[in-house]
Length: 115
Image 1: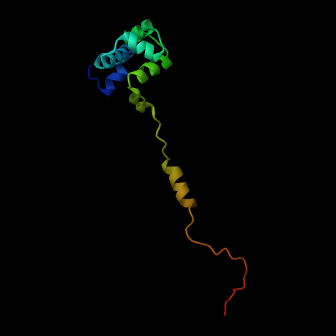
Image 2: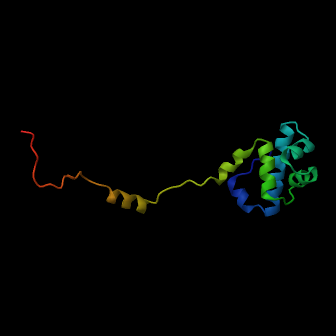
Image 3: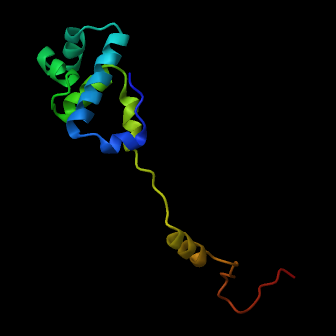
């Protein structure tokens, strides 16, 4: 497969990107020594739909996910994971609201003595 750097992804057309995805799918299928028919049946799609995907034609997102699952390539979904991060302002506000010292919760003013 062709090694394409990040900045080249930005300059590629939608058609070129779908062709790259199709080439990835075909490469993975061939590496696993699976026929289009085998992958299509396992994914629950027609062989012609898989052929369109491999040629870089437009297919639905669920179809792509089904094929990735059959080819055991769902790790590409890691690119879509959203990392929750706290902003510096929210962190500073949370630190300011933290308790600084303990408080006596006994509301009685008289001290009880065991003596």
